Length: 61
Image (tube, rainbow, N blue to C red; front, top):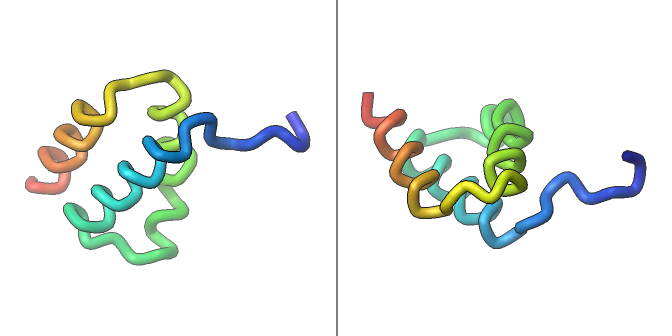
């Protein structure tokens, strides 16, 4: 809804964005493509360590 924050857990979100940039070498415009997906992962309560591990694995290929 309008006026509601997109991310509920900002610490989670910042951790995932940092991991994504570090592991995938993402540029700012590329980050925006996945910003919503990363926010959704945090909002669903997925474990941050599991999410970081998944990012590392996905970007290693």
